Amino acid sequence: MAKTKTTASLQQKVAEGEKFTVLTAYDATFAHRFSDWGIDVLLIGDSLGNVIQGQTSTVPVTMDQMVYHTENVARGNQGALLMADLPFNSYGTLEQCLHNAGRLMQAGAHMVKLEGGAWLAEQVTALGRMGIPTCVHLGLTPQAVNKLGGFKVQGRDEAAAQKMINDALAAVDAGADMLLLECVPSALGKAITDAVPVPVIGIGAGPDTDAQVLVSYDLLGFNPHRMAKFVKNYLAETGSIESAVTAYINDVKSGAFPGPEHCFD
Image 1: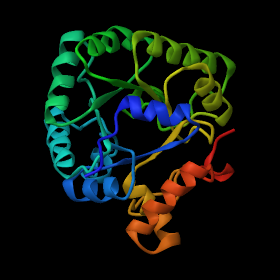
Image 2: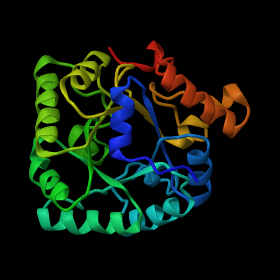
Image 3: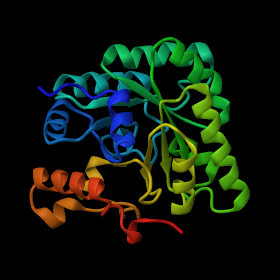
Image 4: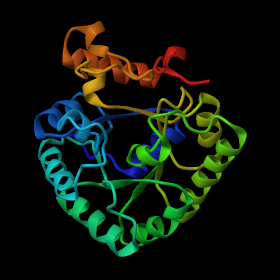
């Protein structure tokens, strides 16, 4: 098995000008295949609520479910860094956050992802103190879909864009090891990537982020609903799951994905 990737090894990739790839996984079999084929980071996402459970949002996903799926992915992993989502309402207080992040790490995760802005600074700092790496998710934060009023592009006006930049800087100052930007204009994705010293992962955030992430079910065209603008169905073009994942890896590393048709102005 390949040597497991770390936050430090991924930061080194970025420093050398190489982009890295992220793909969701929820079970041991796909985790084994995706990591063996060269995916750098496997995200055990609370998107399992949508693609596995058939929920309309990620809000119903529980902590116990995230632990279960993290354990499964860890058993199949062949050297990818494992990032696991802290689900809805599981990290609002410091005590709650530390307890639940610890559960994910003991289940096999190498880092945790939290949705929010500058208000997460205390949690991020405390997690780092306990040896738990963090990725802070900004932009369209699906757990807040009821507050946001739907799945909408974020940061389109000047004030909202500046607030997101400030949130990104606050997260990094607090000790965040990575950022993830979802559904933001490409120019804002570039501005945040240029402003912070840690890797930035994008999904619908333009071509200038340090990495790209897709939900694996979307990449394979298995989503029965209308595909989001930032999604590309690689299986339709390649004919096999391995070829689809390989094409995704090559396109991210070359800068071919995302193309203009996958980005927001």
